[in-house]
Length: 156
Image (tube, rainbow, N blue to C red; front, top):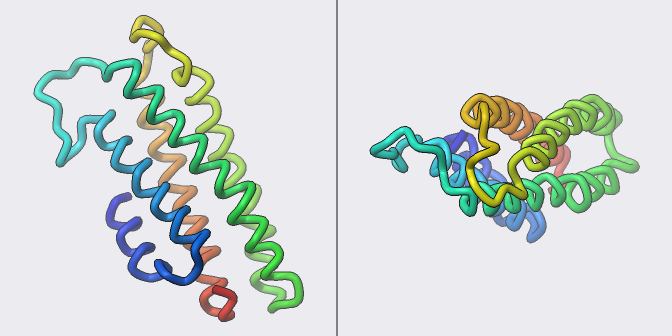
């Protein structure tokens, strides 16, 4: 996921301020995910659950990221596709429902863990975090396809 993020920043960074901000939020989210999961370079020495405060902070970043997509970036994509090639609009129509499915996974994760005051309700946390990672990876693939389509039609 981090490699995909770096490629996206290199490819589309600087194209538009809103996209730059969104890609930065995406990167922060991924870094915090890797910390929570204890993945390199943020390996944990023990297999203990993360602190509830760290999970709450991650959930805040998660909601900010998915919200920025839905309420800023995707609206801008739709506006830019208005009188452009039909395949761009068709791609957006294909991908938005798929992206929405990943949003549901993210919001379910947030609802389960975002308001936790301690780790006593972290049953199946690792499994849920892994499921969230799969959804985020799909989401980023879909988002990158949209950005690529906009780039192809010089809409960025």
